[in-house]
Image 1 (cartoon, rainbow, N blue to C red):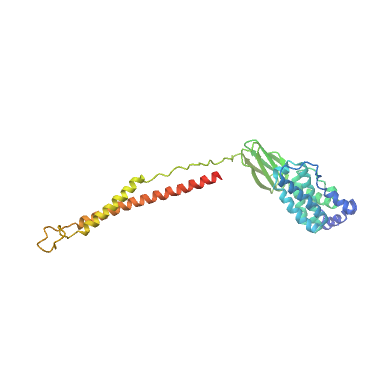
Image 2 (cartoon, helix red, strand yellow):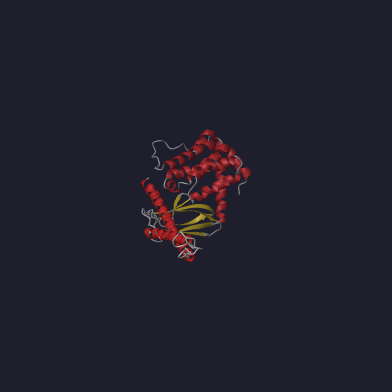
Length: 331
C-alpha cells in the first residue's frame, strides 16, 4: 500500500514531471465544450454539466476552495440519471471531474476524502480504464492502491428482475439487468420501463461482502391515474324534505294544542263564572290531555327539526364541494 507521505510527495511534484503548472491543469480539466456542440435537451442538465466544468477549473486553481464546490456540483449532476447515462460527453466530464476532485482533496491533506472519491470513480467506471496518467504519478499511485484494495475485498452482483421490458442504470451509467463483478461499496440504481407504463424505481444498494447478490424487482407498480368524478354522488336524505317539514309542523301544532289544554284546565266552560260558584255549569279537566299533547308534540317536533337540520347541513356541504370542484376544473 502506498503511504500517505509518498502520495503527497508524488502529487506535489506531478506538475513538474508532467508539464508546466498551467498546462498540466488544462490537461486535467478540459475546457468546456465549444458552443458549436449540440446542447442537451434538458436545460437543467446542461446547467448542471456546465457547473461541473466550471468548478473543475476552480479546483485546479484553488484546491481548498474548489474542492467543496466541485463535490457539490458532482452531487447535483447525479440527480440527472437518465440524461447523464445517455450522454457520453457528460460521462467523460464526470470522470475527469472525479479525478480532479480526488487530487484536490489529497493536495489539501484530506487523504480519506481523496480515497473515497477514487473509490467512487472506480465503482462508476465498472472496469473501464480511468485516465489517471493525465493527472501525474501521484494520482496514478492512489488509483493503483485503491484498485488493489477493492479487488482484494471481492465483488458482488446487482440483479434486477424486470417483469416488463426495462432499462437499468447503475451510478448513472447503462447496465444489464444482472450486473456482476461489482466492487464492494454503495451504488445508485435507477430502473425505468421501456414504454414508461410503470413508475421508475430509484434506490441505493450497498454491497458489503464478497459474492453478495442484491436482488430487485421491477414492473409491479403501474401508473394509474385516479379518475376524478366531476359530479359526486348526491347524499341520501333521512326523509324527504317535505315529510321532515310536515313532521316539524305537526310537532309544533301538538305543542300548541297541549299548551292550550293545560291552560284551560279547571276553568269554567262558559268562560265567565267562577268555577267555585254554582253559576258554572261545567269545569274543564284537560291537564292530563295537555301534558300528553305537549310531550308528543315535543317529541315529534324534535324529530322533524333534527332530521331537517342534519339533511340540510349535508346537502350544504355537498353543494360547497361541487362549487369548489367546478372552480378547480375550470381553473
